[in-house]
Image 1 (cartoon, rainbow, N blue to C red):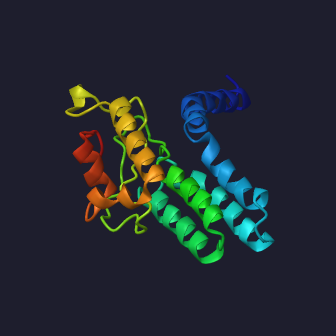
Image 2 (cartoon, rainbow, N blue to C red; image 1 turned 90 degrees about the vertical axis):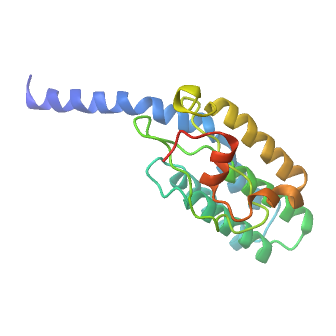
Length: 195
């Protein structure tokens, strides 16, 4: 094989290997970053505020990548909520905006399928009470009784139920999460297939 064709073949293999992960990323988080990006412009917020909200939406994908800091998602969600509290004056708009931040907090992080997933172990995150108790979804291929815990599918049903509770009644959201990290809460749910 000539060097050029060898290089092309190697690149093709790398792309083929990455395709499943890229495909999952598009399936698991399609709306939240786009909804957040459009929010400020659609509701007529001042240009600077709408621009900052769009900037936050552009930062979302990097916090959901498998090699990112497991706490990056919670840190960005905190920044999003804090910004809305300080800049969005109309309560009904702030409530809609906060629901987008809460939905982002529940978004699935990508995981390297050859390694166990990682969850944030910092019990102080997320800091905002609207976000406490909301847990990220898990790649459906992870977990299960053979790994000593519940399946990712069951964990995702439980985390989706938590998100609905938080969206419907934010004051009930973080009560059981005080003093516990996201990793602690995932373990309490019964999902143990992580580092």
